[in-house]
Length: 207
Image 1 (cartoon, one colour):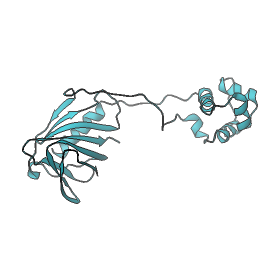
Image 2 (cartoon, rainbow, N blue to C red):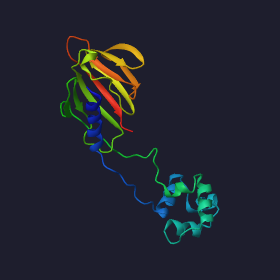
Image 3 (spheres, rainbow, N blue to C red):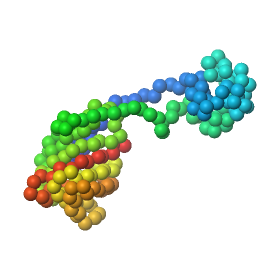
């Protein structure tokens, strides 16, 4: 597979995504959720942040706009920064996303050297591109130079035997159950050296 063909697959995966614009943060809701996440009552939270219970209650119910001094007290008491009061959590947030791809139901993409089956196609804005591939290439010369692209890549051999060529390492032969994880900006190509076409699972990062 040429670098252009691989870039096309990455583009296909990214185009199935969508731009996600974060919703504006409701300060009242944010403060209430932060307090509840710590298991605090209004009285406990008011004592921790150094504000009157009535003041905190009004903030949580959107009945008053806190001054900057009050925001500083809230942030210090909650052990976060002031900007984090207005920022949705990005780590550890449960999205509940899931995609199931039954055998043979992935999106087919055939090149001169590989037959790809793109997996988890229903998920939008993915951070990883998983795909199953049948390795048709039998020699390094079948490629138009090195394949290279942004991110990192994980390779797991499902059947047969493959030879992994990389720009900075000696070629390595991998059989069923073997795997490799590598920097995808480094030139790399894969061929089958078994009698039958080998099959592999590839996972490529998209960020």
